[in-house]
Structures are given as structure tokens and as C-alpha cells.
Length: 229
Image (cartoon, rainbow, N blue to C red; front, side, top):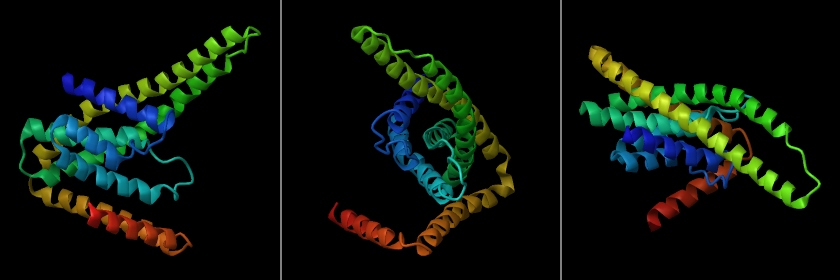
């Protein structure tokens, strides 16, 4: 139960940052997975899951023609499922555990986006009821209540969805581990191919546009920073 509370708090705070706050990119899977991993004691496993999810969602971000999946919930769920499964099963086949967690993270991201759309409609209907009173003091107080309430609503929805999804995902990952058998090699191969395809997609998109200069500059900066650090 304690782990689920921690996960709910992380998901809620990251949802605030991503959609109602500073948008510091902490909610992106590569960062959120590290936060979850440090909180649950399996940073390496969580980060491996987060990197794969990050690459996949980067590769489809501009190709879907619509909003991408909920990266906050998907990243938190994937990383948490990997950590909790490793802790509970102690399975030495770490790539298999990560593969199952990545699958759950992808599904959770899609499901959370669908739920967020419905929940967002309810939130917008509530916000439409706001009326600006003539009294400046009352107007300021009411506006503050609506702004804070809207932000907390976003955090609460993502926190609840993440907790439910993590509980289900751990069961799915453990089922995959138990039933993998001879198919474990195929599951691990899928985990290897998935980010490779994502990287190729991103590289292809940059290669066909003037953004390739930006990509080259970003790569150079990353290399220099890695060398300095």
C-alpha cells in the first residue's frame, strides 16, 4: 500500500507540472521513470523502461495527427511495474521484466489519454459555470478557488489512473514472466527492436526536414555535456 501511495503522489505532482504548472519536462518518461526508480529502489530497471517509452512516444509525436498518449501516466506506470515486479519476483531475467513493463506503460498511456479526454470534458463544464462577481474581493477569491480546483482535479485524475494501472500492470508483468517459457527470447527481442524502430523513425523525420541541423546541434551539446560531466 505504501508503494501505491508514493506512486500516486509522484503521478499527481508530475501531472501538475506537465499540464497545470511549469512544464519542466519532468513528466517525460526518461525523467519520471528515474524519479519512480529512486523512490522504489530500482533506478536502473526503471530508467531502462523509461528510455524505451520515451523513444517510442517521440517517434509518434508528430505522426499521429492528434495528441500523443498520456506520457506522465504511461511513464510512471511502466517504471513502477518494472520496479515492483523485480522486487516481488526477484526474477533474474531483467530484460523480460522490462519488456512486460514497457508493454503495460504503452497501454496505460493510451488508456489514460482516453480517460483524460472524458475527465477534461467534465472539468471544462465545471469551469464554464464560473461567473465574475462585481465585488473584486469575491471575484479574486472565486477565481483562485477555480484555478486551484482545476489543477488539483488534473492531479487527482492522473494519480488515481496511475494507481489502478500499476496494480493491474504488476499482475500482467508477473503473468508474462510466468508464461513466457520458451517465448522469453521473443519478448526480449521485441524490447530490443522497439526502440531501434523508434530511433530510426525520429532520425528519418529529422533527415527529411531542416530540423536536421537542430538534431545535429542537440547531439553535439549532449556529447559535450556528457564529456564534461
